[in-house]
Structures are given as structure tokens and as C-alpha cells.
Image 1 (cartoon, rainbow over the protein chains, first blue to last red):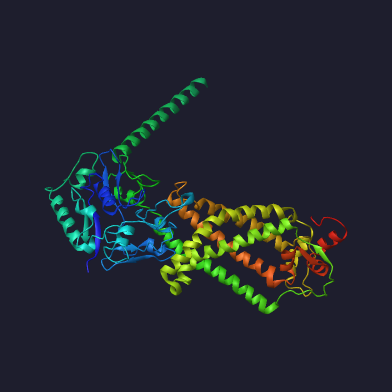
Image 2: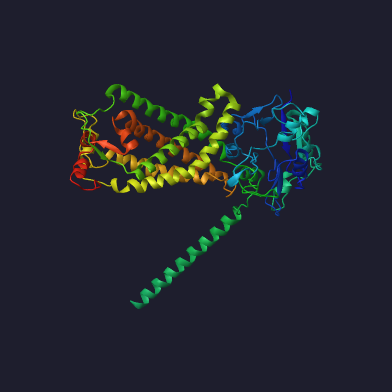
Length: 200
Length: 329
């Protein structure tokens, strides 16, 4: 089976937030929940960089390790999913996650956390593929339809890549080689040297 | 003499000036050789800072929308799943083991003389209300809290993820909503018993004889509460009780106040450490109050004790009450 991975190319991301919007629309995510977000470092400075962040579907996922009800599971494709029926909304997965991926809708009195919601790599949940219950709880299951995550599919600069780890790595390696010969996008040395001494 | 001193002063000035020039020159050279580094000077430095949690900005609103990497999360996971669960579990099991062993070796403390049948009041209805309110909320808080920390390890293999989910969905509600009630009862309990838990002269003897634990007679005269009970009152109920309730209150209602993950991680750890210690101490108190000491449970159930019980367990208090005084220190 494939080993699914996201990769965001900092040389290409233009902080358009289309991935965020596409994700929200595709899965009809609850109010206040963002499965994906774009973070910009050093905003407005020459060293500005943006990256699109969501669940990175870790191999040894911290969220899964700290969950008091053990509701996470990893699919054959290496996608980390969770069972919303078991989730109690304690928030521990958010405390442990390096990427701030788990999100919680406000539910009930006193601003209590509802059931956790996060990026599913467009792979739904434990219910039957493309069933109405799966659609309502986890959003669309694009992987079951033979499609890749929408955020990456529609990324205009192809900064965000999603798919089998080997293929994603091959695409990125090609880009690095091209940049190294100074014929591709801006090289990192040029981009990051504030003194202007770019070595290409 | 004045000429000499003038020359010396001029000499000193010259030396000072030369030294100052050297220092200035050195400084400029140092600056030229090592220009101050701005963040993101090299690619490696740049991403290292992001990895360590340097915040940026994001269109997604929230307490930490701009933080790309939560650097503490993995450490927190290791601390919670590692030492906290391991040592916390060991402390509780060790305490339980010691109590069972104590019961098997020494058995419950029985009265050495027959009861007189004459009852005297030991607890007022208000004191019993404060005690049972705290006790019931504490037991519910303790069980649900233990289920959150150890449920997956202990019950998980038996009832599975869905079973745990159902159990803890209810457990979380109970734990979150009963927390403030527990705090209220704890404060009530502290006020109810505060004046009886002050230092008394007889406490010295109690400490010296370790509460009569190893002496043949067993009983050391004490006031309304002995030093063991006072320790439980101050260290357990007051310090740990308030500490656990306060950290719990800060963990509660997450959406009302947007707290950072760092704060929540630390609070979960502190709350759990305090709770494990409080639970361990409470096991001792619960043992002494139920099977450990004959007649202790009745005193809190009915508010009255037999005169023999009073004389054998709290002699100074008994004499005080018999003499018509309040019995309070």
C-alpha cells in the first residue's frame, strides 16, 4: 500500500489560503474549526515564508498516544484517523500535537469542547466509505473515490503536495535539483541572505 | 611636590586615553568580524527557530493560530505516558498494599473496654454535611480522574475504545461539573474544622510515640483531633485539596478563556501529581475512618460516639467535654 504524506514547499507557498477554504468547503467543517491553516513566519520582511499546516499523519502519533479512550487508528495508507463516537473532547490530543491539528467545536454549556475534528487526508472515518454518516461526521472520503486531498489538488502554485511518500519525494527532489542549478525557483541562499550576497 | 603630582596626573590621563582607544578599536574590530545575527540568517537557523515554536501570523484566529510547531507537545506526551503514569500508579498501588498489609498484621483497632452506652456529640450536623459533601464529590472526582489517566491501560483491554468512550464521556461530564462543587465543599470543610486543627502541647507526645503505632498500649492522649488527623487536614484537605481544585478549575471551561497549550500541559501534569498524592493520603484516611478504627464511621454517620471511644481515642477532648467546656483547643 501507499504511504500517504503531505509536503508544503516554502519556496512556492504564496499564502493565498485557498487550501484552507477548499478544505472547509469540501468537508463542510463545523463553525470555528479549521482543519488546515497557513502560517507566515517573518511576515512583511525579506525572509518571509509561508507554510500550509494540517495533520501530518505521524507514524508515531502523539495524539494517539495520549488519547484516554484510544480512539485513533492508522489506516493501511498511513493516514491517522479517529473515531468520533468514542472521542470525549478532552483536548489532550491538541496538547500533544506538534502541529496544532486537532480542533474542537464549542459544544454545550460553559464553552465545553465537543468531539475533536481534524484533517482526515480526505479519507473519512471508521464508518462505511462514502456513507451519509461518514460524510456528516468526517466530511468527504476522496481517497475512497480514488482522488487525492483537495487542498493539494487545487493548490495553484503546487506548493502543497499530497500523495504517496515516494512520489511526493520524487517531485520535490526534482525541484531541489532544478533550484540547485539556478534554473528553477529562487534558491534558498539568495532568498535568505539579508546582505544580498546571493550565491544562487 | 605639586609639579610631581601634576605630572603623575597627566601620565595617568595619557595611559587612560590609550587604553580607551585600544578598547574602542578592539570593539570595532569585533563588530566588523562578527556582525549581529538577525533571525533567519541561515536556512538552518531559520527553521530551527520555527521548530522551537517561534510564532508567525495566520488568518486562522485562535490563541496559537500563528504557532507552526508546538515544541513542548512531545515532551508532555513522554512525561504523561511515562513517569506520571508509572510512578503515579506505583504510589497508589504501594499505598493500597501497605494498608492491606497493615490490616492483615495489626487488624482493626478495637476498644479495649466495653462501651458504656452513654453517647456524647462529636460532630455537629454542619460538620457532617461539610464532610460528606466533600467525601462524596472527592470519591467521584477520584474515580473519574483515575479513569482518565489509567482507564486506557486498565480497562481498555476489557471494554475497548467504544466502551471507554461511553464511560469517559460521562466521566468527563461528572469530573468537569463536580470540580467546582468539590472546591466549594473543601472550603466549607476547612472552615468547619480549622479551629480544631491548631498545634497543641499533646501533639509533641503524639509525634514522639508515632501515634502509638508501635507501643503496646496503642493510645496517646489527644485533643479533638490527633496529630495524624491534623496532618491530613493541613497537607491533604487544605494544601493538596485546594491545589488540585484550583489547577482543575483553570483546566475547566477551555473555550471561555483561550489558554495556551503550554499552560494546559503544565496544569494537567501538576493537577495529576497533586491528585495522585491526595488520593494516596486519602486511602489512609478512608481506611482509618471505616474498617481501621472501630466506631470511627459511626461518629461521622450519627455525629455521636460512645464515652469509652472518646476516652480511648481523644482523652483530652473527652475530659474537656465532660468538664463542660467546648472541647475545642
